[in-house]
Amino acid sequence: MKINSVFNSRALPIIGSVFSGVLLAMSFPGFDHSRLAYIGLIPLLFAVRKASAKRAALLGLLAGFVFFMVSLSWLHNLTDKVEGTGLKASALLGYAVLALYCALYFIPPALTVAACVKRWGMDSWWRNLRLMFAVSMVWVAAEYVRSFLFTGFPWNPLGVSQYGSPALIQIAQWGGVYIVSASIVWVNTALFITLNQYVQGLRSRKYRPHVELMLGLLPIALSASYGLNALFTQPVFPHPIHIALVQPNISQSDKWDREKEREIYTRLEELTDTVTRLGDLDLVIWPETALPDFVRASRPSHALVARMVERGTPLLVGTMDVEFSESGRTYFNSSILFGTNGNMMAKYDKQHLVPFGEYVPFPKLMGKFTPVDVDFQGGTESTLLPLGGKAPFSVLICFEDIVAPLSVKAVRNGARWLVNQTNDGWFDPSAQSEQHLAHAVFRCVENRIPMARCCNTGITCAIDAYGNIDRTLTPCTSAFTTADIHPRPVGLKQTFYTQHPDAFAKFALLAAATVAFALRFKRKNPA
Image: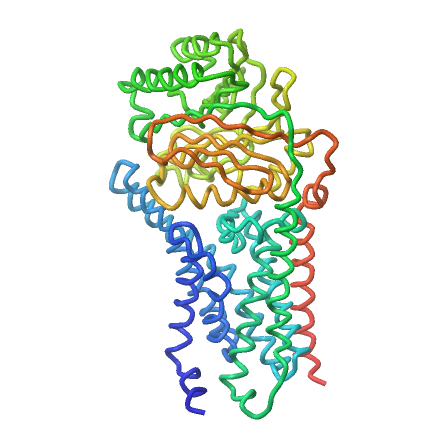
């Protein structure tokens, strides 16, 4: 009775909500305590179990706000990269507003717990299993909606915290990162129910089998078993692609400084010249916007590219591009593949642009709050880039590797391996680079396809089709590395996720709607 009164104190739910936000944030890169994800929701679940709908919503919002403020704390670095007091204040305000917006998606799970406990109770294992299912589905539905609503911000779904545990994430080839999120929430809810039974004194009266706990741990056991089997029985992929990844580490302030152009050219040339002398390569890759101008409209940039490819290796260049028409100029964030003759072989234009980074929504209203002075145009298709008889590939630029449908689109289009060219210089050094890498790992597992990541700063590495990371470069250093990429074999059956992208998330959305309807119907019809 004494313990129960402590759990019912008015201050404790607020503390529990904040504690959940902190625990969940600590499970992500930057803190690297991934196992905390499996208990991180428990304080919040206790906080809302007897709360009114309004209070549950506020507690969920608080937990979400703390989580995103901590896990997105690398956004602070953006304030050091923009000039002007007004812009710095806008960056800080934008950080807080983004965290608050994302926190809204913690409200539906919190409301679900409060409503289920109030309407269904927690006095039988069957009702408790319904609670576990309901909370897991609502959580996944909220993450899924966040991934596409208002252009989407799919950063740090709960499952991403487990990117460093290959055995636990192989199930992503069936349900994407969302099925991993669901398993984490399922375990949290099972542990909460079990602990709540002791808090309420239900288990002090007579022995009861821990049905909820046993079933709660079952998905983790099955995931680990399936994952270990997949890892130990993975086929050997022949005919690797030999690539070089160049990490120039150009600071953001130098990147657009006209006086620094020669230094940028020199660094790219020295690194590329050195790596091409080391051995036989199929492709050299430069990161996103590696060149300080528009390569097809710039003599110095095009001359540099021509010198590099005459060594006999194609070059994939991250660059801005411009097209001229009667209506004016159109700008793109592009990736251009140059052949050994210096001619352009293929070009990909980034499809998913970053608001306030590459374009300004409502420019008359919001233009003064951003350093962006040119709007880019988004591409419309996933380009298949040829490699002279080698396996073709597709490119994802910047944060496109966190947008799961773009990887699916590329694989369906025939890509047998992926390249991510990015520039994390706006935020480095910070946890952002590691979090960015974590999302890329899931794109590989979901589609059973390898990826090469080439960063200006950040984490330059190769990821195999099972999410194993071959990382050889230290972030924020000027360096290069070589890697062997084993392309997806021709004729290999596409994963369930590639064939039916986000089917699990869509099922969760339907299940969440059904739960909401059932709870509302029961309230109107208590009999």
